Image (cartoon, rainbow, N blue to C red):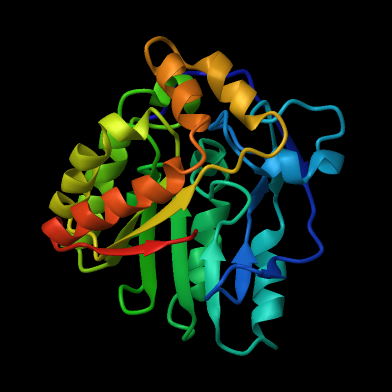
Length: 268
């Protein structure tokens, strides 16, 4: 199931490398089969950090498909030591284009059984298609959920959050390590939803929860403000102005996770 339809054009490209050294704590390499993302998340940090790669294009309206990435990855794995690989860091590996191109599936098939620790992070339920080709012993699957109610405004091209959580439950029941990525925290929006969201995560069988705050670089805050409807728009503006909102909300999440017996890791 996909989110609201968007007008997206696809560009097939060739890549020179498949794996990139990662600066993310605990991750050695990142693997991004695509550049660009059809999920069109309003708050996405990628276009704000890589404006030079947009080349005048609007984020969420194009996807570069690295058609040769499986071949390149196969070559790199011959000389690579074991490590942890994140799929993906600057795109969604299971955005709609993956249904046609199956680049993520091809890469996961190459990684399965080779001794690497692989973390798959997505905002889609499509990943359940590939549970048959990955190894539960070395792979873990994480699903991002930012909001239960405002996802159509903030994540117009992504599948509904309940569909993602249902897919996470399927993975958990199939023996895979799973986690919820709760982020970015949208002030004034997540406040009303966090308890229900964490309860749904526990019901999905996740092993832990990762939480990250909102990065307001560039026009992120203004873009969110324009996308939200009332009363969430007003609540967002008010909470964003509170300097200690993230610190205080972090404490609330930690307490809820303790009550639910959920391990919780914060990125801030």
